[in-house]
Length: 216
Image (cartoon, rainbow, N blue to C red; front, side):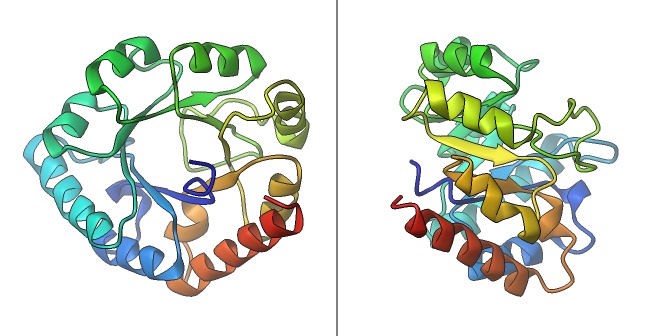
């Protein structure tokens, strides 16, 4: 799981300035290790349109053995036979989601150590900590928790698979991994890049080089 979290790409149609399928193709080519379909925000697709896009994105991930996670929408994840579900603190309770999805991957958004412990009690496979830095990608984002929160959680939960999210860029990816994160989750760092494949490759190289240097 920790290796799968290395470069976790989160995306929905509203995050893209061009065709989402083309964006994902380039991101996969660049080296993403996990993908989350997060169709939220103003102008987000719903119903059949949302399902059809998810289905096409899933096909691309399956062809390259990239785990495909659905954000919040458990019904969609079950219908697609996705690899897992990611939920936030205000979404359906993690315990309930675990019961519904069986042994599929379960990720939970957390902001502090208490929420990490609660997620682990619900048998989450990984936690997504953030926002680490201020972010414009999520309208409902909480206050940035910084690198100190990664270190704090890692000091108390040494083995929990942890991916950091929120305002992470090429410049900040290295210190995030050094602080103890197993990977970075990004939206705009890839979606808004002028050259998506090249940007993804650079992010992947930074993460993997930093992890290897730390013996991970």
